[in-house]
Image (cartoon, rainbow, N blue to C red):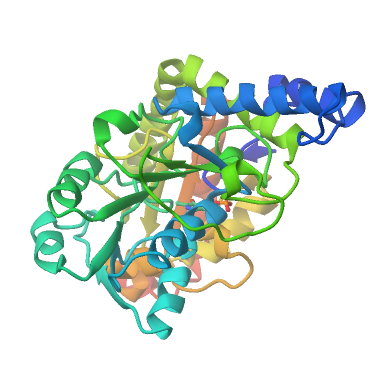
Length: 385
Ligand SMILES: Cc1ncc(COP(=O)(O)O)c(C=O)c1O
């Protein structure tokens, strides 16, 4: 089996599993309890919080632990909107559904939402952003790296614009954290979302960085855990695992990035050279190191995924998180792609466990299956395949 869908999720690192096991077996106390079992669980959370903070150069008390990227994004949006006077939010048209859907709900509730357009690479235009900010704007939320095409936005510049206009700035950094160096102090962002399962940690756990002094309202009320910002007994084992995943991502970041870049460079150059009528989508350089995203004209990305799966290769068209319902990618449409280009797209994302041999095998399979699909394609005569 070859797994090339690391943007959807990653294998849990062996050291992460080891870190988690004691919290199922011996250290099962409730972290809010005063006794020794409780204290040990609480210490585990504080250690993990420190590791999460270190990955993005935050302070421990700026880390709010959540159930993952989706909850972090929802908390950022509702948490700011519900306690701000302003009723206007600016986002981009290529965000993950975990941003778009809460924004759309707020729109139904009477908020004004601006969905900024993007160019052919997936970049928002900073002049467009500046023009849209008004006295009523309470939040700007723009993703760090796109989950489909991997394009990295100029987050530092966007953050500066937001700060100058006194608007809270959130970034969904789920696909960027652990892949490229992120320093929240240097960026000056107010809120930043992280997800554990994208960095070889367990699923269902993540964090929202909340800059000191930024006030948000909680989504969940109850026992007052997480300084009142997220009630509910903490998922200690997953938090400990997430902490270890952050430590490993931090320790090995440049080594992992070099490894992933080597694989994606090889994959890209071989695919473009050996399979005609194929393009690489997203920006050629300003992209996260583990992402490739192609359009193979004349084939359907879904058919391609099925064929790859038959050959024991796991890939994606790009919108894996809105599972099962295969809708045309809103990201590619916003980038100005034609129906044919959107249909023929395929995302291959590598991770720390992939090898060069796997990349070579994948290219060979791709050459074969693309040719097979093109031989029965309705576009056959158009391109003379
Ligand atoms: C950019 C982005 N934001 C948010 C999420 C949701 O994160 P989670 O699966 O942890 O809820 C994902 C998941 O793919 C993502 O890629």
